[in-house]
Length: 96
Length: 532
Ligand code: HEM
Ligand SMILES: [Cu+2]
Image (tube, rainbow over all chains, first blue to last red; front, top):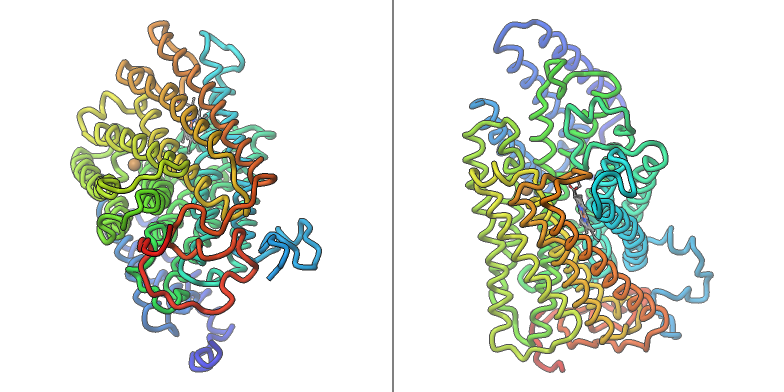
C-alpha cells in the first residue's frame, strides 16, 4: 500500500476548500437559474450544473483523479445505473 | 489456537466479556453479534404481525384502535425488512462464511465491518424509539404526500432507515472487495461456492441502489422540516417522483433479500443430493442477471398510481423478463435432485420447503406483473400474501435452512434433528394456513392495511388467524430447539453433512485464525469425491 500511496499526488486542504467554495457557487447559480422561469432552461441548466458538480465531487473528494485501473472503471457502473434509471423515469414523466 | 475446543468463541486466556464481542473485528464474532441482534428483532416483528392478525379476529376494535393498527403494520414492515430480512443472510452467514469459503482469514475491512454492526444497532434503536414517541403510520413505504403531513414521528423513522442503509452499504463494499482481493490461490471465480456468487451479486445491489434510498429519505426529511416542495403537490412537487426514487431502491432490495437465500439453497441441495450441482455457471450468471434486470422493474409497483401507460408497458415487460433467471435457478435445483442419492436431513427439508414456497411467491408475482390483472389486485391481500411468500416463505425459510445447516459449525454443537424436522413441518403448514387464504381474500377484494373487514371475509380471515398461531408455535419449537442445541447440544463433528466447501475443513467451531497457513484450492466446491 505504502509505495502506491507515495506515487499518488496528495490533495491539499487548500484544494478541498477551493473546490468546496466552487461547489457552493454553483449551487447558488442553480438556485438563481431555476428562479428565472424561462421555460426549458429551468430544467436543462440545473441538470447541467449538477453534472458539473458531480464531476468535481467524484474527481476531488472521492479521489478518482488520483485513482487508476479498475477503481476508475467501477464508476461506469454508477453512470450506467444512473442513465438507465433516468431513462426509465422519463418513460413515465414524458408520456403522462 | 485455543485447545479447549472453544475456537473463536473462547477468550484464549484473555477475558471473554461483552466488550470482547461488541468491539471485535473478527468476522466470525461479528456474524454472531448480527445473529443475536437480528433474531431479537425478528421476535419483535413476529409479535407485531401476530397481534395484527389477532386484531382481526372479530369486527370493530378488538385489541387495538385503527391508529394503532396503522402504526403496527408500519413498524412490522420496517422491522421485518430493514432489521431482519435485508441484513439477515449477508450479515450473519455472509460475514461468518464468505471469508472462510474463499480461503481468507477475514474480510478486507474488518473495522468497517464492525462499524456496520454499530450502524445497524443505532438504526434499530432509532426505529424502536419511535415506538415510544409516536410511531409512524405511513406504512413501510413512507409514501408522499401523506408522509409529509402526518403528525407522527416520520422523520425519525425515516432517519433510522437511512442509518440502516449506511450499514448495508458498508457490508456490500466489504464483500465486493473481499471477493476480488482475498481469494486463496487456486480459488478462481468459477470455483467460488454459489453462496459467494449470490452474495457478490447482492453486494453490488447494496452499493448501487441503497444510496438512492438514502437521497430519497433525506429529501423527505428536508421536505418535512424545510418544506422544500420536491414531492408535495401543494408546493409544486411530484408525489410520483417519490415512488420512483423509493422503488428504484426497494424493488432491487427484494433481491437483496432473496438472492442470498437462493445462495444458501444452492449450497444445501448438492450436499444432500450428493451430486455436483447442475448448471453451476447458469446459477452463477443468473445471480448477476437477477441483479441487473431486477433493477429495471421497479415501476410495477406504480401501475395504478398515476404513472404513464407507456411506463407501465415497459415495466410489465421487464417484470416478466426477470422471472427467467429466477426460474433458471429453480430448474437447476430440481435437476440436481434428479437421480441424486438424497439424504433427507433437516437443512434439506427446509430447502424443499423453500422451493415450494418461493415458487408460489414467484408465480403470484407474475400474476401481479400483468398490467390488467394488477388493476384488480393491487393493494389487496393478494399482494400481502405474495410478498410474504417471497420474503418469509422464500428468504426467511432459506435463512432457517442456513441456520440448521451452519449453526453446528458456528457453535460447535448439534441441535435435535427430530424436533427440528417437526418444527419445519409445523411452520410450513402454519405458513400456508396463514398466507394462502390471503390470496383468495385478495382476489375477493379484501384491501391491505385495513383494521376491519366486511362480514363476507370472516371465514377466511379466521382460517388465516389460526394459521398465525400454528406458525408461531412452529417458530417457537424451532428456536427453542436451536437455542438448546447451541448451548447444551452434543459436540458437532467438523463435517456433519459431508460438504465440500472450505468451511467444512475447519474444526467446529473454527479457531481464531481461520486458516493457520495459506491453503491452495485444487477442486471445485461441489466435488464430493473422497467425502462421506
Ligand atoms: C408470524 C409472521 C408474520 C405475520 C403473522 C405477519 C402478518 C402481517 C400482517 C397482518 C400484515 C398487515 C396486512 C395488512 O393489513 O395490510 C403484514 C404486513 C407486512 N409484513 Fe408481515 N407477517 C409476518 C412475517 C413477516 C416477515 C417475515 C416479513 C419480511 C421478511 C414480513 C413483511 C411484511 C411487510 C413488508 C408488510 C407490509 C407493511 C405495510 O403495509 O407497510 N412479515 N404482515
Ligand atoms: Cu417489485
